[in-house]
Length: 87
Image 1 (cartoon, rainbow, N blue to C red):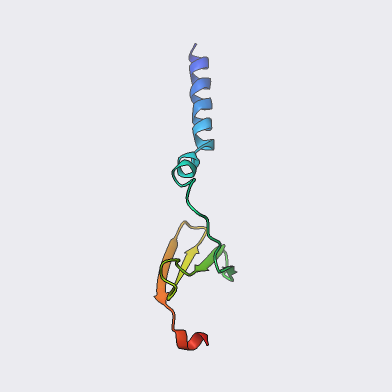
Image 2 (cartoon, one colour):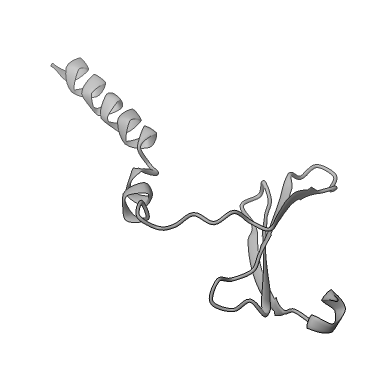
């Protein structure tokens, strides 16, 4: 009986781990997906650093940058776009 309970608990834990992102998918399933205007990797030694840039829909005069690395450190920054430099 103990073996059956242990196997059931183990299978339940594995099942929960496999569906860890299920709640997030349900909560944001109706949200619109937007492609970044730029996506690239930074040349860094020993880290996989990814950068995504986009322009917010409600403020075209801003530019936002999201940076993520393998060490779970992430950062987001937004800054105003200088229209004179774009021309």
